[in-house]
Image (cartoon, rainbow, N blue to C red):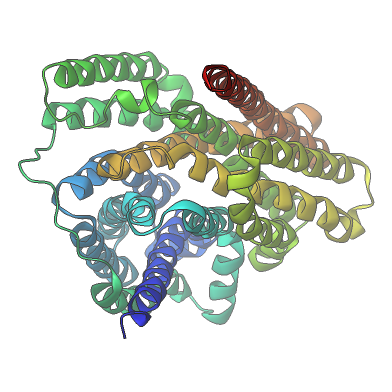
Length: 491
């Protein structure tokens, strides 16, 4: 019996992981899945374009603002408790969004749903750190990275499929209703499978830090979520204001730490935790290109070629398939290859997207989905070697007591990068369209090229960190050889 207990505990850990992955997929999918339903939603609720924009933007804003405070709260009061409460709230808010009779109530439900999703997300990575060690943690983060990558890429496909099956003026409601049975099942399984761990005693939430970080992130994101309506030009002053607030937040956190308090985001994550700062920077830069490129593809295939939402989503499915397959394999290789894996992953994804940009510009229009499929598959394989290994290497040396806040900060950087990408790349797309007289092929090629350039910046960070690791390992080996020689001489 005693020999069976570890095996049973191991099986339960992996079952618990699948519960967190399903909920993570569901919450991240809701960032993109709603976009394809906006036209039918606007007609069904007789809403203005500005109010409908808040259905997407309100969720994204609330999601980003909740991440770090919710991660710290999970560290303080228990990740299992926060996870289950947030999941229950997400299910209720999804039902409320589906049943909303007016656009105002829909926006309220979406903002609340975004808060719940933001509370869920950091618990996912923190629970992986809590439940797994060593090579198992790498495999678990590989699956987690696949979830992040695939959920972002397949949103248009899933949204288009739901709208195809649930046709009619009220079909858009199923975009939200589909979360209810999935979330309720995950809630029941989570209550049974997630580990019970006593939270730390006497921990407090840094409320001034919450206010400063929230205000800074809000100031940076507001102009971006209103970019399509000219919000970036009118609200440009929020960018320096947000940067100043984040600088004040960093100073406040250092002060709290120096006085022996409990900061919202411990500065030692950046200064004393190997790999955290370069990993978080790489993630933010990568998501500028990764998140924005899907909107550009949707605009090109739907507006430029006249594809339906479902057909448009299927055209980019090879990327999602490649990303999912590579992420699982990369989770097993990251312990052996380290940062080199993300270096080669970034080279591959840039090669895939660069080739796709050339084909979109020059290949015959009728055969574009078939001709770009191999390039997108290669890009997806590279992406799978970036997202999940980077999560593993960014968080692997983070103390478990700070895992929630660290995971929340990492995902906040991803959300900020995604907001920049979803504002800049479609903006560039429309700018080229206007300058070339609606030349969609040139517009999509230049926008995808800009996404590749953002990934080039991430590549520079990855190479720098890889070279630093090589130098560190070389010094360590030299010190070990010197110790052995010294010991041999004494003998």
